Length: 247
Ligand code: BV8
Image 1 (cartoon, rainbow, N blue to C red):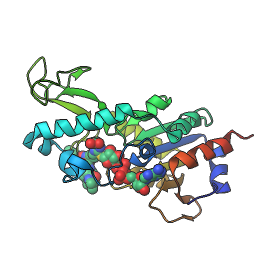
Image 2: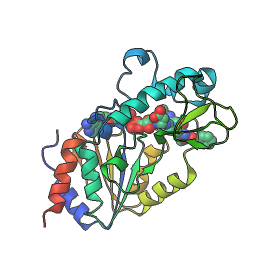
Image 3: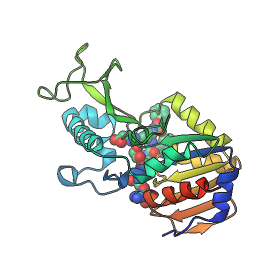
């Protein structure tokens, strides 16, 4: 476990004009939200997320998929941002330009105060008509599930990007450009398995950025522009902010 940040990484962050950050489920783990790779628990133990988070699953068993998202939405709304989320919101005030890109659908970055997180995979707290795309802030939970769209009767669905669905083009383009233009790229709490998000650190590195990967899988090592830090985001990010805040 990383005990202190490499001085050369802190120096690169101090000198950076543009910082891009990619977060994954590991950043929300300390808010009590299970990561994607954590074994599914309870009622959902028999399913892998990829088997539920897809248009095919929704077509095959819309009620099951709706109920999985309803359970996760309730958990997300009951969760609080953790020290890692708060530190990332503070980091925005310490660097000239910071682009926060998240794979997470829990909305916790915005709740922690991050100004404009790029939600690559959508937001589980939002619901839309599966045909018209109209968003609904409320819906009937006591009738058929998924609730029918009040306008056209098609099933409502969570506003997330399922496996096999395209990411929102504008959001992905902004994320890609931020990775190309940044001086430092931090990849935090992600296993780097899901594309195209997983390509962003490579894009940053190939454009000359310093890249740090922070999660609980990596083996600690550092090369010239590459850092692998084995650390909890809720511990390391406040340390990073405290060091940058020091004159
Ligand atoms: C698409 C929303 C194309 C739903 C999610 C190559 C190119 C393009 C596509 C593909 C490709 N190869 C394969 C594909 C297909 C697929 C894919 O990547 N499959 C994988 C499984 C191989 N990609 C897609 O389908 C994407 N669509 O590319 O479309 C296309 C083109 C034309 C026409 C049509 C389509 C869509 C992908 C989006 C899927 N939706 N979420 C929902 O949430 O239900 S992805 C889902 O996984 C979550 O968003 C999650 O964030 C994400 C990734 O997981 P991680 O965040 O990394 O979480 P994980 O559990 O894996 O890891 C946790 C990490 O945290 C670990 O490293 C752990 O050590 C660490 N950790 C734990 N605790 C802490 C910690 N770190 C720090 N501190 C801690 N305390």
